[in-house]
Amino acid sequence: MTPPSLHHTLIGMDPQETAGESRIESIPLTQSAARFLRRHSQMIQFYSDMANLAAWADEQERANVKLLALIDEGDAMSSERLESLAKSTRHLEAVKRNRGVILESLISNSVDSFLAYIGQLLGEIFRARPETLRSGQTVRIDQVLEYDDLSELIDWLAEERVVTLTYKGFYDLQADLERALGFTLVPDEDAVREMMYFIEVRNLLVHNLGLINRRFLSRTGADLPLGAPIPIDASLTQRIVKTVGETALSIDARTSMKFGLNRVDVHIAHWSSGPVLVEKGS
Image 1 (cartoon, rainbow, N blue to C red):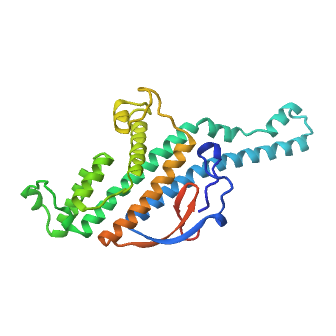
Image 2: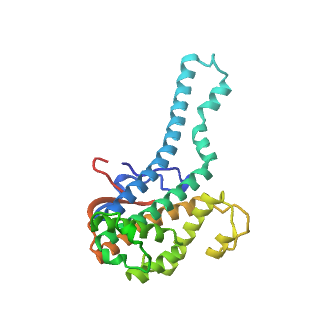
Image 3: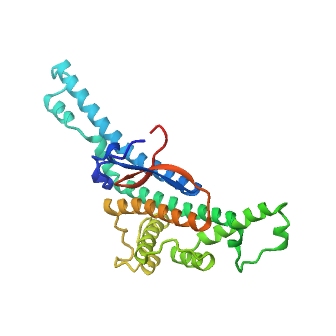
């Protein structure tokens, strides 16, 4: 896997970033975090490759045009046409025309992967420490009797608890985990507000075609016009992609230590787009 060199006009990644300049380290992660970071890294690489492939196609086209000019000596095409094609960047321009879709997709995928990670991490906690499943929730006897042993019952209870928790808003989820587990997902209040904003931007993109609604304004306190498209640019996208990766690693380190979760050693690189997983043989 190579570092992203996605054109800076698309999402602000540093096009000069190289493997030699990236800081690589080995760190322990839970299975949930390793899965998250693998998917997150693949997403970053995909969008990088898309832009780089377009730039490569333009380069090949320009080289072919120059070769054609030498062979045909301009007979097959007018010199003006050849000169125009020799300067063409039409493939990269096509990517740039769809820049808004690319940025929105990056934001939605980044936030979705982060929220999925939180849900899977909670499942790991509940299975490793079944006593954390204690709550005021009522469980019917017939539901309990559906399972042959205690481990299956715990798996089901953990799954149900995760579903209940992850449907909450981020503030409510944070407060609930503090009460139930004595654990704070994101300790810094400014970071909590920022993550809440990112999640609400994702909700607008996924559920409201990116148009600002009253729910978004009430939850974020943003001073933006109702019904207008949510402002999306490279700077915001870069911040979201980087922040969700760094926040997941921070949560994972603190959670695994507090609850004694099993971890595996993985190699990560620190790029301008945040932490990414470095697979063997990359």
